[in-house]
Image (cartoon, rainbow, N blue to C red; front, side, top):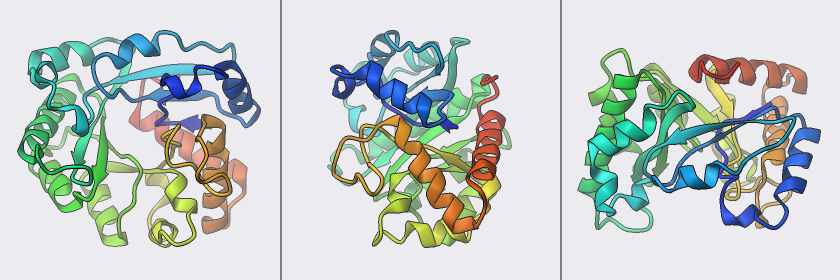
Length: 254
């Protein structure tokens, strides 16, 4: 299995990183994709190592971090994302939950990330919180046939999911799909599995039955089990399909 969105490099894992990665391996995780929060994330990513797990970098600036002036320089973003070991651009997107003070700056940043992603022919990784309409409107505006990417932590309606897929996006399915009252599972069930990726967003958004505790990459198996239940398919088939999807979107994954 591939965890396509995991902040394994954060200090939350500093005390037991080896044990966390061993558990991930035992749960079938072969690859972990690491989205950046800002340009400094790359330094933290360099320490990731495990004999049975491959780590892949993604570079970008989280929408909650765009008030850092250096992060707004297109040249800096392009340089950060251009490396051959960088498989995606992000995470970027829109977040209106914490503050709406920098809404316009977030939109500008998202457009810059889209431009860089298209220029480098790499997928974009989209964060969305309380900003679905604006996010999809900007992706539609930027889509010229060459933009690919994933709506990370998909939490939308069936119609919103279909709109995203029609615009060339995959849907990142994580712990929220296991929450009993979130309703995301009902949307996911009505959308095509061949456009879904597994993810954790660890250390955040821990799936049931561990909700409220620190998330970790091994819990991606719990998300896969939820998809197995929703689509009435064996876990092995969920693994096969979502792994193929990840490799289609992120072609540098062997």
